Amino acid sequence: MDEALAFDEVASGVFRGRTHAGYANFIGPYGGVTAAQVLQAAMLHPERLGDPVAFTVNYAAALADGEFEVQARPARTNRSTQHWMIELLQDGQTMVTATLLTAARRETWSSHEVRMPQVPPPQDVSHPAVRPRSVEWIHRYDMRFIEGVIPGRWEGQLHPDSLTRLWVRDEPARSLDFASLTSMCDIFFPRIWLRRATQTPLGTVTMTVYFHADADLLRATGDDWLFGQVRGQGFRNGFFDHSGHVWSRSGELLATTHQLMYFKE
Amino acid sequence: MDEALAFDEVASGVFRGRTHAGYANFIGPYGGVTAAQVLQAAMLHPERLGDPVAFTVNYAAALADGEFEVQARPARTNRSTQHWMIELLQDGQTMVTATLLTAARRETWSSHEVRMPQVPPPQDVSHPAVRPRSVEWIHRYDMRFIEGVIPGRWEGQLHPDSLTRLWVRDEPARSLDFASLTSMCDIFFPRIWLRRATQTPLGTVTMTVYFHADADLLRATGDDWLFGQVRGQGFRNGFFDHSGHVWSRSGELLATTHQLMYFKE
Image 1 (cartoon, chains in turn orange, blue):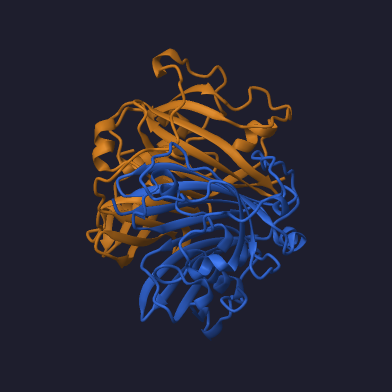
Image 2 (cartoon, rainbow over the protein chains, first blue to last red):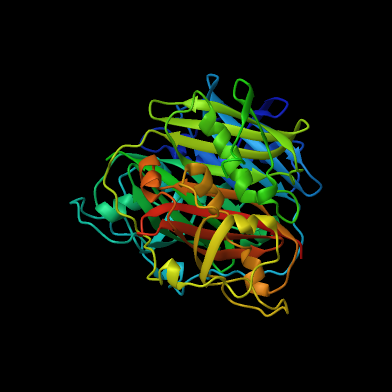
């Protein structure tokens, strides 16, 4: 992850990065690492104010392996919040668009409404018997599924729901930051594969992450396990979405996340 | 709503609109109508391809009453999808940023995972005994609350959850389109008011809408009642989010929506 997040500032607010072979997916890189790279470019911007609070990334085209440029622009800077517009380009073509809100956070009344379910601790959960098709990026995460692994047999069995619960951490272990948390928000396999047990071609078109954790809470979380839960919502005419939550091992809500995927048929 | 959605194209891809007194909120306009206006500018753009599928709008500053310009730019046009970056400006200052995905949708396997709950029909639900503080925009909607009205007494009672279920439609009645559906996705009162029964100052900073309905389904829905359900998620250090769903009266999922609000203390 540290290698993937290395950038050169080639002009004011323009950062050159590159795809990383360790995060290769079927075609191009794992979307989570691309999201992390787009976020990181804004984090590196000298005018950046505060921590990420809300981030939306839109995948406009499949990245080619190699170099890219990220242009991050603070469209609006207020006293304690800042709104960013970001584009990732290859050969002058927009491949990713994004918006980011950063803010200087203050301590206030806090009381989460969604709660982490009671689950066995990660050391008591074995790796899934069935691993997803071998792509490189899944080896960058240690995943321990409690329920909702992708199907072992692709024989078109239909399921009414697609709940997944898993423990996850970076492999190798690495202290959590906003970029790596963003990447982990994309860890959930496509819900439609769980619903249909059919490997229809698909891809994420947009993902939003709301960070309930600030930098202090991420530091306190360190390289410990995170717990993720996700469930599908609407599936209709080429697109479906899911809603997910990511907690620290101790049950602190770190992020909520939603994404929309296209699928072929 | 039709008046609020009237624009003049003042340059290629630049549309001049204005706030509408009928949608006034405490300060500036109701955020839902601003979201609808930002979406509508892209809908009017001569290069627009297909229907909205995913829309994220970020409120960067409070709009002043009066005119504004919306600049909509197709950052990437593919064969069947298009990615937009949009800004709303007043006096040359960015007030709103947004990204939009539009797509030419095709019929595919469809089967929603979230289902509309069993609730009494709208004609059997009376108006709430307690109306929220009188601001103009709430008179643009007929709202029938099944549960989760904002508190009748603001005496700091704490509640563990903030579920709201309501029937809603435009007032006056109006055939549904993507802009008005977007506006209705912002109909839900701030979840923190239900959790705390305290009127802390607050505002929406970002909202995302995933459209599961295409134009045909919106046309079939017409001016009938919609059913909305929403629940809070994380509440911590100045920000909280909610996750919501909007169905047609017959139980078709039209949109899923998420938003993040800031709050003061």
